[in-house]
Length: 341
Image (cartoon, rainbow, N blue to C red; front, side):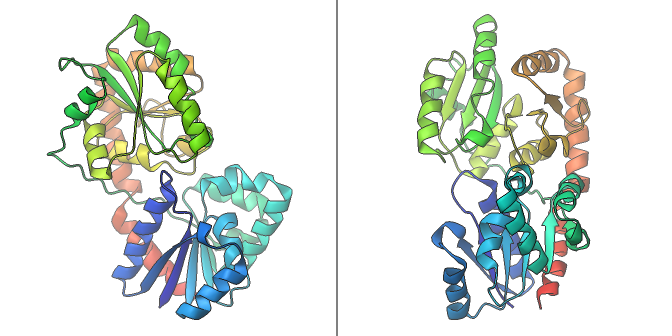
């Protein structure tokens, strides 16, 4: 089939990574799958013109509201993949929720990353429950063994004289929903008492205005550092050599950064929100915190208890291997897309 895959592809979001992975799954099955950015199309009519001009036979959209509304009335069958914004934010707006329900009625199938997300969706749009499939994100990690991560951190003033700092890594595009400033004050206070701890925020400026706010805050915060986006394999090399990966988002669908850290056997401390709690069992596969103060407390516990570190990373790796198989995800999408024939 000639398939259109429609997603928001801006830098610093998980959508692009997810979309390219699904594109690869479908192309491996012999389909021609063309990836397009939702921001390039202002209306369903523009997408209908694209479909007509390129002879697409079916489509997939990532995010019900962002992509699905552009596929409404397109004349070709389509499926929808939920994003965290769909359930955590857009569904709470009555006007958007009504539109989303109509889109789900028209879709051949929908994909949710977690059972919890499916149940929440079914509570908003009960008549669509039977067409919602649960398929976790598949994870594959690869790091660049030749990447000089120490040089990167030294040139940024983070590591000096090869000291053995405890590096906490927060990976996110700089936008408000990721809330990268949530821990900054508490962490800075901690660093002033224990200079070996450092928080590194790394990622692109998705929201330029907010990114400036982050830069100004970090300049005044001891022990907190801001680095620009680097290639994924280099980033994974940094992950493997940090003490822990941090998530501070106020809303998540399913964080690829969290899953990748678990796969790389690095401890994760994540904000206790539904999207994170769906993949992390507290003190088993990671640590969940509900305030900056609790984050500091749990971090100190993790530093002082190497056996807890080993236990968490071992169980997290087992969890990711079992529940986030790339091969299983590939087969699932290759089977689901047959519903669009």
